[in-house]
Image (cartoon, rainbow, N blue to C red; front, side, top):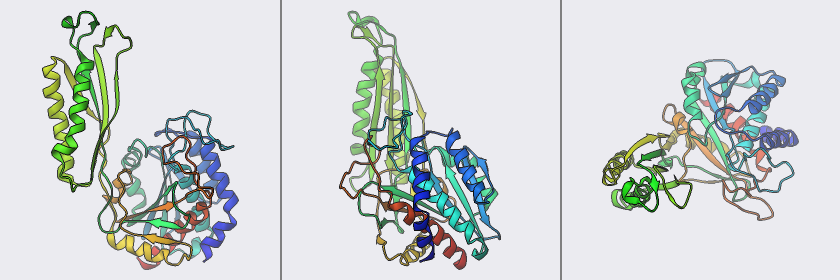
Length: 385
């Protein structure tokens, strides 16, 4: 098929894109190197683009019909241990594959620009920062992403470091990825000498007990049949063995596919925190770090894209996938009909670490396929819409 053949011709160029993003890994909403690189490469293809909420927004074609193609591009604040010759040395690392997503969409943009005269509408390109912090999509939406482009449909891809290139996973009829309510609890007591605890208000002791109680919430409040995960990822307090700290901090997350359980667990975190710290005569403040909805794809649109992928003889489709992770692309799926596909990118030599592991590697053979899927699905949807 045309787009896959052309994407293969641009393989080395796409790999070069990927390795630039990988080597220059940036995190959060401030990604100046990625922004400039994308703007320059889009300009080289004759595509006009602009900054939008920390990301880049571009458009190809003309007409009322519009489909949005999204690629996240941020890394994680961790030291890379992949051993790759193009590994990042910045203290940030692309251990979730977002560098591949951005590279695939850049090449898809080039493919679509070359066939712009055949498009039956517009294709909007969303290069998004801040997915790992679940805030980038919301920032771009706040900068009028949808108002500027008026898309009637959206598509996103995400690679994974396992499976064989060509395997494609999706969910058309239920929640595909869980909501994520991240929280931080700051506890304040009164510190002092460890030999005289009766003169202190032990913030660390309260934090330890609170950590234990919150970890029990999932089993106490969520039905066993639900897909729910409550995790405490951070507990910080104290700096010396003989000092009772006057402050402590917990951070955690609630993920679920049930709206009622989501609301109940968030409520209970607040209630239990208030009750327990009072028992320790401390005070506490709960801050919600993220309030990301569940990612639910549009059934009709997703099935239509799955049918389009049938044109790729190398693609093997797997439906009904459900992941415990979260993605702020859910901010898009909750507003317009959207689809989301996972692409397997396991290495040929069998080397396999999970996403977010410092030594994870992804198979670059997936790059032409991802670019072709973006371009092909956009063109075909515009024909049918």
